[in-house]
Image 1 (cartoon, rainbow, N blue to C red):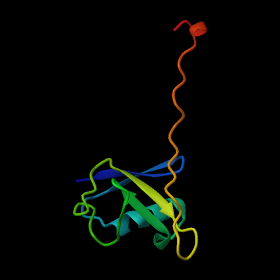
Image 2: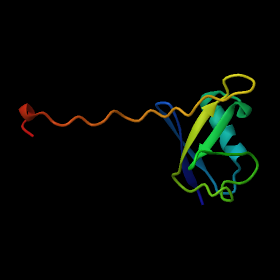
Image 3: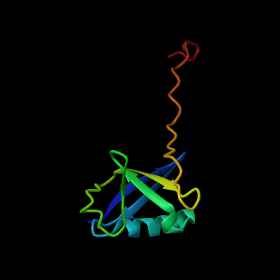
Image 4: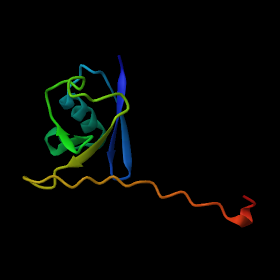
Length: 100
């Protein structure tokens, strides 16, 4: 059964198609082809800001279809960047002059 996850970083969202039997490592490999960052330099964070790791399949990790996952990248040998997900600007209320 195919599914997808939304991987967000800064202003970008990647829609990654996957299968529940794939591992987090498989997802990181797919991201590697999109963002050209080595698998070891990627960290995926879900729900309550817990890191999801490597070899367990995403079905057992309780990753659901259309879940939003944060992507952070390694800054140096020891640290990863903070989670950076920019929200879209708030919608502007229509002006009275526009007839609304």
